[in-house]
Amino acid sequence: MVVGVLVALSLALLSVYFRESEHGSLHGAQGAGATVLRPFEVGAERVARPFRDLYGWFDGLLAAKGENERLRTELELARRRAIENQTAAQENAELRAALGFQDVPGLKDYRRVNTRVLGYPPQQFERQLVIAAGSNAGITLRAPVLASGTLVGQVTNVSPNTAQVTLITDESSAVTAYDVSSNATGLVNASEGGALSLDNVPKSKDVRVADVVATAGSRTERLPSLFPRGIPIGIVTSVRNTDTEPFKQIQVAPPPNVDFSNLYVVTVLVR
Amino acid sequence: MTMVDALKIAALLFVASIVQTAILGGIHIRGAAPDLVLVCLVAIALLRGAVAGALAGFLVGLLLDTAYLARLGETSFLLTVAGYWIGRYGETTGRDRSHAPLLSVAVVTVVYAFGSLALRVVLGDPVDASTVLGSALVPAILLNLLLTIPVYALVRRFLGRPEWPRTEVRLLG
Image (cartoon, rainbow over all chains, first blue to last red):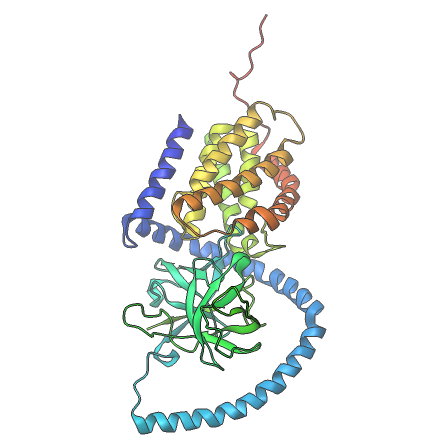
């Protein structure tokens, strides 16, 4: 009898929550509950932090030698690119000023809310996080979430003091993106296991390994992108052309300094 | 179940859910994370029976859904069923069996993974079944089994000896 009532109550809650708007009473009650739980989660996270750091330190030590070599090569390449980019940026600014160019919203048009990750997904198929800032900090639904300057997800539920973030590695996520070198535009999707791919890129486009992939920003009025243009998403790790597929098969990996399973601090962009 | 027992169970599950959300949820080993709440729930259900298990499952599920800002009722539903089922096993076949906690945790981890997946499919979520039921399931079972013996011992010490319904077994003659 008791069990039947509890099961029915669970299903009723689920049904009402699923149907009501984000301003509904259950959402409100949940937000209040999350606010009450927040200090406990913050406390537990702080207690666990030194142990996590120690684990991360040992884990990092094992991979340090190989990583050091790779990073030296990358640094050399980055230095050369930085010089080229500086010249190009200067030229770009001068030309924009001369043309009176009107651009789509960029990163500079957003305010940054830096916050801590409070909770981690309970199950393997939930690629979500709970962060320690909510609507009181100006965070809204669909706000982009960054880690180390790289797009990691978007806000999918907000309470006054916490928010739920769905990572771009979740299968429900998709981001319009472009290859910075070739300007080829496509859609970054997550496949099984959370691997990212840049889809819908025509075979004619010259996309290469190590190219940077970034958010494409708004392109159409009907379906504007949720993210400002130019947020890095990752680096192209493989490009394949097959006879059977109409588009290129492009695999994208987040930069080495972004570990989706180990995010501690994130930045939410708010307008 | 006495009022003191109810308070103890509530405190235990509250601590377990905070530890789970803030600490253990972030530890991913081969795609799986240890589930302290599930193991605690199994221990409570085995020690206090089906009704206590179902009630504990419902309340801790609600707490987890609130902490994660997930859909209210989803985890409650799954944990209510899990708590009741393990409680019934503890009251009947699993009574006084030393392997009951380990067997219950292994089975409930598998059933919970299937149940979550099925519920998400019904609700129209895209889910990666191959990871959950393939590569991550075995590590999840092993991690939960590693937690079982210390957690069961702690919960048993905290709650006291198992209490079985007196009407369950009647001796004739």
